[in-house]
Length: 233
Image (cartoon, rainbow, N blue to C red; front, side, top):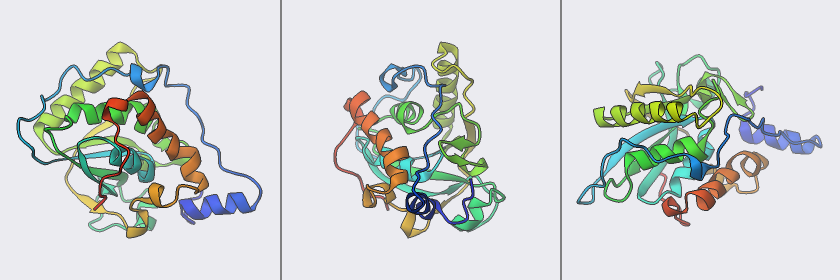
């Protein structure tokens, strides 16, 4: 799919031309989000309020940001770029797939209200399909890879254990391809990418690809859902 015009422009072009871009639905998810088990290995909730950061990549960052903004205990969710080699990449550069970056979301959360393992459950159940290699829905390229960028050794341990747990339980009918990488750096994306799903609810791309993710969070993981969104910067 040609990304040079950007997501919003492509959707507008499709509507004007009398067609819409439909998501390539995956048959890999064989269970409802609520059937994706909680992590067997996780940190207990902290005894006092605090702040921790996690970084996730799973396709277009618009949808990932929208999902985590609605998770209880999340203070902010910021769209950006992680995992690459260019110091300050632009969206256009990342979209070429040559910088090594992935469209990602930096999630700041209170570990006394939500655990890292609970965030992982959201990521693997409603935020994206962890069995698709270098693509999500209509978006294709290494910049849309499934990845967890851990910020602490504990996050690395919990994420690795959860990937193994889901694989052993055969929750999906294809192997999990999620990469586990150290969060060396995170570059905040351009302002027009921030809070995009909330600001543009009628955008056809959002309606088809991202709004259903938030609805699945609300329906299937209601204990983690909050109606209001957290700040994004």
